[in-house]
Length: 106
Length: 161
Image (cartoon, rainbow over all chains, first blue to last red; front, side, top):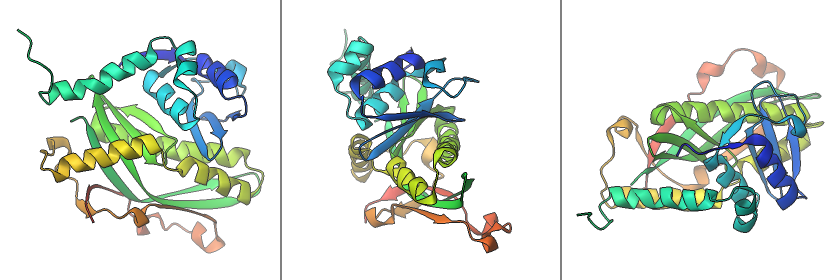
């Protein structure tokens, strides 16, 4: 799916929904650690090494992975990215249609 | 079906932190998926990485690059080797959601689902959970001599044990 989201919005979501997570901006990416998991996403081309300077865009699928690994609730994800999870659910259902499980259209 | 289970082995990368040099070797699993014409490679181990790329091979190549970049990023912020080792293990921890999808995709193949052309050239390898591992160790002086060719990175499609 082509849906993209602002990197700074991912940072805000983590700050609000996973306040105990540690977030560090490194050379290549933003690293986030919470509990036993660590994950990463783009910090944006050429962005300085502070979370507030994160910029550019990242894919919705990355948001889903980050949210799942950091145990961020779907409600929180929906609050920050309205419609994103519904959109992901539609994509997840699509392969079934390709397998022929969808009722045939007239 | 749009999920394809992949095993990789022989991954090796050397990083330099503020007070240490380390070598990381890994055997893991990824899930390659096609969604709306986009190809994604999502780590099961390492669970913390997902990338999009051009076709299945492109996605896997970008995944390897993202894994290496993540290791370098972790190293630059780790004050000691022990901290680095702990954080690499956290990055490598299994993503339980993608692990379920990986197992489901493997189940499709075991039931006889056709392997798409892009994956037919991959070798088949018996899959054992115990093969999944990451090792982090200090780089010994002797290892600094070029020996990259001794380890070959490989991708394969899993078979049930």
